[in-house]
Amino acid sequence: MGFIASRTVLQVYEKSAACFRHYTDPWQRCVVPATPTDGATIDQEVRVVVGNPLAKLVSAGILATS
Image 1: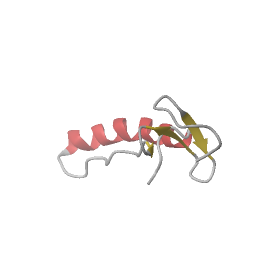
Image 2 (image 1 turned 90 degrees about the vertical axis):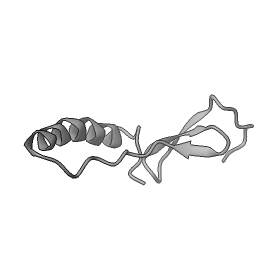
Image 3 (image 1 turned 180 degrees about the horizontal axis):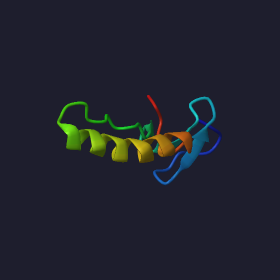
């Protein structure tokens, strides 16, 4: 991925994917976990509460969409 030897503490920002990658042999990126889709009314409220922070983490480049 670059000109220096990769170590497990190395982290880089990948512009094309707009997210951070970290090296754990091989390179990995954090992907957004799937949000729940089933359930009653209270589950709908939880989906909103959980979904908002996940969207913020994606927009900050901390989590990747794929």
